[in-house]
Image (tube, each protein chain N blue to C red):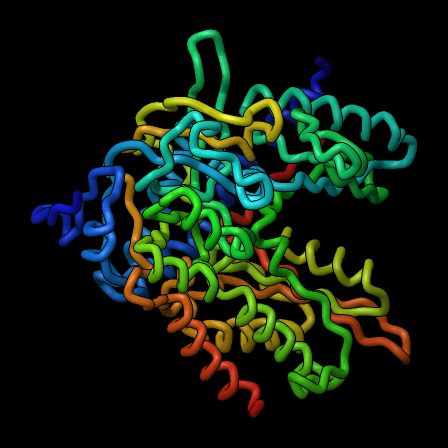
Length: 281
Length: 205
């Protein structure tokens, strides 16, 4: 196994077993504010203990090791085909070694491939890097939360959602309300706004790669993120959906230009186990 | 059998399998610790049991009084046998269309998972004497620590690791009763509260 391939196996290990520090910090803060003796506090105590145990024993912190999504930034001259094959081989090795749960199911035969690879699995996106480096970001997206994510087309009368930031906020609130506790709250919410369905869905997922602690460098979006997070936490769904103050620990919004006829908003919901890791080669 | 534990923050100790009497003694909000054998089943197991309705003799495990755990674990298989790596709950509502019949056909007394279930299941819980237990979403290593042994497996070849029916021996496996046999659902209550807040925040009728 080549060094880069080994590095990709380790990327899987890190993402699956060690929750990013910014997410853990946010969960610790949530634990502080929930009421003593409440379901919310008890749940967060166990969740924090789980995060510690997974990191120490190098076991996957959730049994759903998710859909692996790679964002590869390669400099000019790298073969995307070679990198793709290397990722596929590393995925097979990581599935056995860590181990990951085999999650790739063939639509035709309904059989699990057993090694987390298959048609379009894992998901790999490529971009050209601006310098000589090669970097890879990996997100293991749990499917419980993938199932509750929503795509909206504005205007949407049912929510009185018009083509503006207030409309976007209404979509975010509605998606979280509909998700209730089914997808492991406290959630991290990624929102993408733009011209086409496929693009906003990808953009919303990209937001989940951001640190929970960062601030959007576009002031109006930063303000919207803060406001929506505060309002989501007024819904009272709480950790595990059993009531409480913390329904979400982060809202992240990204925008593209849109077509005059369209205003798509994708709300990508991520469980508390927002597993991501990266390296630069 | 249900016993009150006095040194565990008012948790109720449950010895599996469950009887109807046990189930009726449980109420929404009770925190429980399960001891004994639990059986897993998720999407494929539910679809199969619902459509094929295999007789109890065709299933290698006794489901009468069992807790059916919505879980697709990570299990390592070696010459020494099965080793459980991670085993938290999966979203229960996906099997809402099947569960009422499975409770009724196989005499299941406990459903365990995350996120709660709907009206059909709540009705079956009341009619048949069954309870819904919510365990800790995503806490797969923490919960695996309470699973002491993999006792057996059914349909591993057909359904694969994540979807097979596994039997685990558990000790002090924690859960909260969120839907009881008396018709109460904490999930419905939280949904109502959050709907009221949603209406307030976005001003819809």
